[in-house]
Length: 121
Image (cartoon, rainbow, N blue to C red; front, side, top):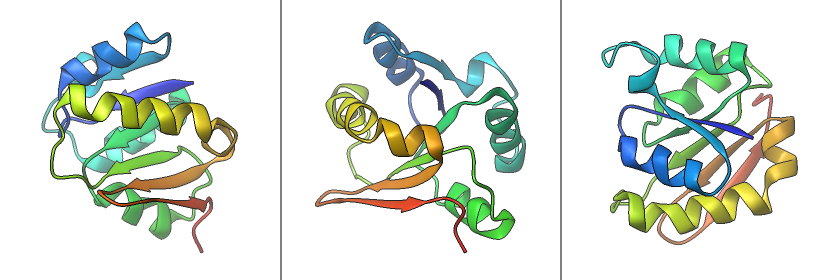
């Protein structure tokens, strides 16, 4: 799986995910930090990356476009420090790989994880 870490999460998180044998890039390695979410979404779709974000807009884009890819992992936790997020993200990637490769919106919050299969309609 290929993971695109959005600008609202630390570039360090992408490095830590890479160390765990996933292909991971932070948006700052690819494009302009002020790029609109639609540009990031389209890049991820074209290049078959899963978007990892702390931004609700990607879920809205999935709903508005009825897209079936890219998968999006929305982190809705208060503490987004890389060393705190990494075990949670690795768990999601390993546990829900089937859904992520097929197309899913996964929301990770403090208490639970919610999964919606794409397209959202």
